[in-house]
Image 1 (cartoon, rainbow, N blue to C red):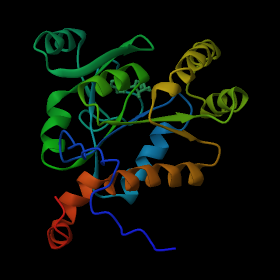
Image 2: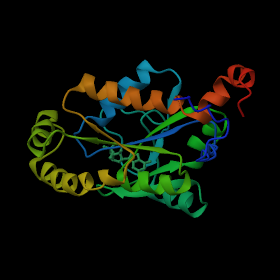
Image 3: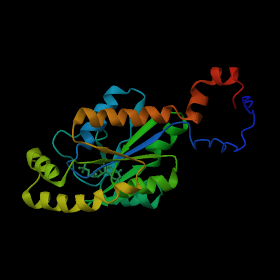
Image 4: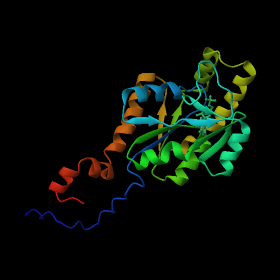
Length: 225
Ligand code: 5GP
């Protein structure tokens, strides 16, 4: 039986490789309070110098060692309202009674310039971002169980029993949003969840459009467009 020659033109044409809107990747990480999202994102940033975090604006008051411009841009309610009015935010949402928002300035220039940016925001903001940047990569971090989440919130010792009750009630709503995200990471074991996050970031950098940009010499040598 003779072997079929390899056709240079596939019978089922490849779909054209969609260009990313911007050369940089936009990773959006959401999770219920107490899931370990902040620690995971912090560890990810320490491991990956190509990732930049976006600092949000919030109307809540600073906690503990938090510094103006480092964890958040702490703003008054009036300033926040004025920023909404001026269209300064890509997204904003009310979370646990405070307002939070991602300014255009915080991400647009960076991803246009090819930087990879991480947003650590709530699910409402994440879904708003996806509408503006369909190529944004939405990652939801789940706790292994509600029992474990409750234990973590209690161990953290930051909140009163009433606040923990509210956080647990919110967590049940938030977890239901995971289905709208691109990726889900279960934070049962920190190191394993961190590995999953790193894998997601790495996989994005191996996409055709990204490789064409980063390995342009190889692509040209292979006559790839
Ligand atoms: P915290 O006050 O504990 O720092 O944050 C409360 C929640 O607000 C967390 O889920 C956090 O991810 C979310 N958050 C922080 N910044 C933003 C933001 O810019 N936009 C939105 N939508 N949520 C945010």
